[in-house]
Image 1: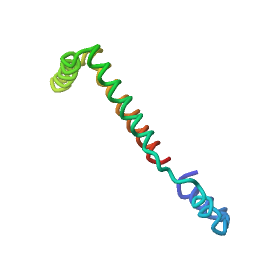
Image 2: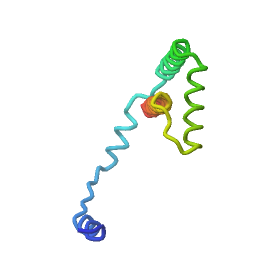
Image 3: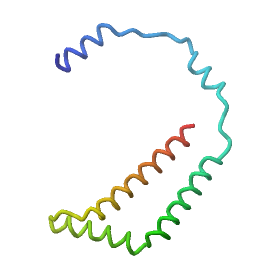
Image 4: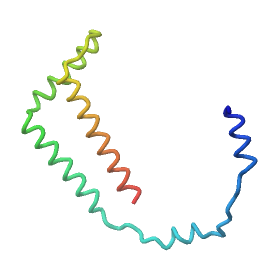
Length: 107
């Protein structure tokens, strides 16, 4: 089956469920979030985590690894494993922070 067949199949078998405003009523009855405590806790943990990482590794080591990564890629060479791990750890941290922000914003 190709995309056209699938779209035609789902269009032919489409069923609409009428909820008579039930979803809107449920959403109105949910309690509003008034506390910013989750954002404060998350920001505190991020600051503590980055501070501990910098204290243990040193900012010079982190900058050196990222510089080596950029230089190796610029020279079309394979970067060192340590540079790749530093880069991937940074991406993982940014991903986790972004996910946490998205989750607390949607709650």
